[in-house]
Length: 463
Image 1 (cartoon, rainbow, N blue to C red):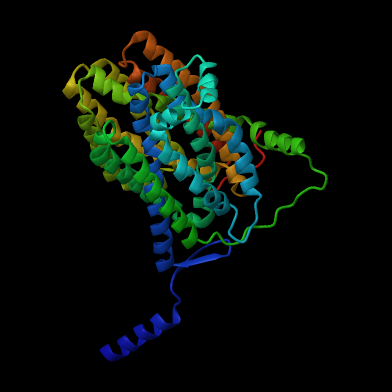
Image 2: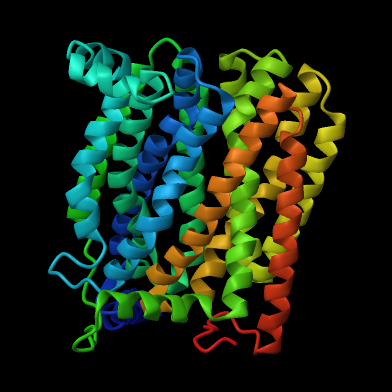
């Protein structure tokens, strides 16, 4: 009897094909999914590590060279958003419609990554570059035209050039994910994605940030090189597969393309609500640029202590991310995001009143770590809201709105910091804008319920 049972099990194993996952013409076995996830997650780890360098270390470099808070906010925060305003829509619109043997996303990443590496690595060498340039009287006379110190101008120039090339990567990198990951696995993938991002931030904050003032050059150069190698390897190992052909109207001008982009993306109140809700989350994050000064100047933390406290926050988030992914799958993206926004907003508003010293700062930085992991739902909400074949286009429209808002708000927060000469207001700022984002997401949720309330809903013809 047992021998017959073993024979039946063997026949069943031979006759039943292994489980596969597919998206378009891409078909993955479980081993294929493991390989895909490994390369995407390793690429994200290095991408997040690279993205942490400028906003974390650059403000300290600028402060060392006499930059004001307004200048720091503009160079380290607003420049990227200002460039994003003009470049992201063009890159994303064309990426959606690009067809090559390598895919529609990878060509943009591969061609610009070497320039990202070079200019990121060059940034901390601005003083040495300036000393060389000023040996020329013509260059010295050119710098004399501007009211800003030459070193601040040169830092700004290097950041601008770096961000121009980085925007090609940053604009399409996240569009690659829903193009290659089977959609039934997206929820779990995004939770792993955030865990890996958290690990990247943990390593930077705990082990690297304490050297920001003494070894900035080594930090920039080593991370830039590791990033370049990893991203190019990821692109080599991942296949985008085939996309539906693009229908191009004959005689369509650039102006026609701009009008088409504007009509598709900005004629719907539904999409506008989504854009504004997302923008408010990013406006709240403008305060992150100055958190190091809040804890260093107002609360007496050393850079090492602040870096380690930031790492503890990330550890808590890593622990909670997978649970947050389960909650998103069970509750849905809308309800999870609404809960996360209002709870996190409330905690930050309370912290404005209750942070007074070293230990209260420690406690109230850790508390929002739990609820903030629910903001992971934003990624899934975008995927189920924006049209799939024009996903990059609609993400770029959202980025356009966010960029305009952030450029203005970075200036405002810099002015407030310069006027008050303190950073106590940062948590209140964060809490107010997270709560405002929650209001917008509630409005989106009610319209979603009105129109059918199913997870694969696409608002192709929203009012």
